[in-house]
Length: 489
Image: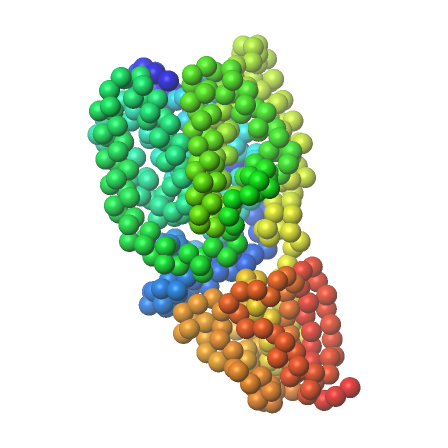
């Protein structure tokens, strides 16, 4: 994979990054507010809107590894507000920037045409839309992972200390955004060992080794905190299984059609580009293998944690398509744009899915916004509200987000979740006594498992049945709203 440093400079001076940035910005900007905030985004809002001391209490128990992101978003909200689009703007900007870096990376590894194609393919992937329209750190971490990969290639070719320093800083930034995404280092090891093979000197290991050690040293406190919170932090992750491995491409690309198209093009890129294709192909597969091995011991298997392999696969796809003997000039450009348009068209249903709901892949929408609208229309002064808090749905945080000061009083809350230092509100042990103070009670019951740190809803349901009658029921997608009035039917 030897490249002349002058050639690298020439490729960086090109404008291969501009079309991917523009296209990705358009893709993630279109209908950015359409997908409702989902449970993880409500957790983001709840954490990022707390005071610094309250956030400290929270991260002592859960999400300690996400504290840097929450603190960044706290400042962001203070400037831009906490609307749905404002919360998602950092991820949207990161997705557009990642598309540009994918273009540059493809140009450095291959040719400007390969880079341009790689960046454009990444821009239209459903997963780019999905994570680019989410108020979570995934898109930002993906940007850092691609930036670190680009800096590694530049450093291996130019051998400049400032490039290695930039590589170390970018790795540290990646770790502060998402520790598990440091699995990208498994791919980087492939590139470094290939460089050792080329230079025939083990001394080539020293600069990248020093950069990685420096980044890890900075991240040790965050790693230790994450290790102590493993049980609370990884509720939606699993250990490695053959089913999860088979499903991984679909999860990473956020669609079967997108995964199949990208996989075919990436394999072509790996096979048609000699040593460069083989090495970059191994770089793309190595993080997946590392995740599979790690998840045999720790339940961290989640496709979201390796979404950075999608842009790497896009580089392979660009290398593969660029090898086709397309006509030169305008005619060749039209062929390329036609292929891109075809990819865009065949993935439209999956793009629409990404914009419709942010629930787990293929899971039904939980219509928190619709539930809040029902309560807003029917609410009266003095109303109370109770929640089925078991699990990770965070219906109470959702109602507080949408209803703000108009949310009915949470009559069962023994204290606030902020005071408790968590995402779950501690409840009064005797629901009958708490409900005796009110005559109208709203109940919000999201679908799904009742597992999780929250209390069970059975006692509350029994207390309501003893003293109240059901006066209204609204069934929405993934959630039910009930209205109870005092008195037996």
